[in-house]
Image (cartoon, rainbow, N blue to C red; front, side, top):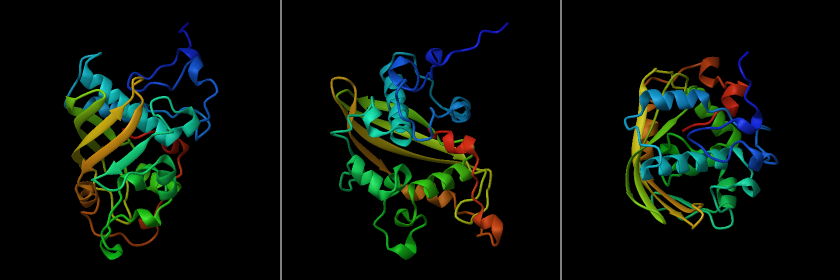
Length: 242
């Protein structure tokens, strides 16, 4: 008979601090650890780099994935890859946000898609989306998740600079635009500052949000109920991007 894997034996080879004794009392946003099986499959099938286990590139890639997992799925008091008391987050040179600032803005996707464009020119307006609506929107558009890979690490630690790639397939509608099935990807750079325990204390991302959003709005807008379709699948709600 095949041996069943116990909760304490579970692991995720791309993310730390999800299972084991240290996470026994963790308060997960969805009530349980997220399932990354679908997006990890997308990552393994579509990545352009396979980093050697233990290499700086592999460690940085796993740190980024772990940070994202904690930001989206844990409460700050349970963070282990992030120093919640010092964490600062900025995009494209904008003013840095604390965790409270990110929360007030409506969570991760809104923080990543900040813009100073006039309201009438915004393809995606983070001021009109909540944590729930933005997460539902992107998990509907990218049902297999939004994969992430490190392309190159330039320095680190304690100051880690790297180039990254994000990709997914548009297999669901986005703000009324029909699914194309096309590969959607964008590239950027980031700078992380970490402490002696390799906890992230500062993050700066640099990329063109239009590279992502423009690819999601190729088709003419749909009319009717399909344009407003919002999927509520619990598997998608619990799955992670990257």
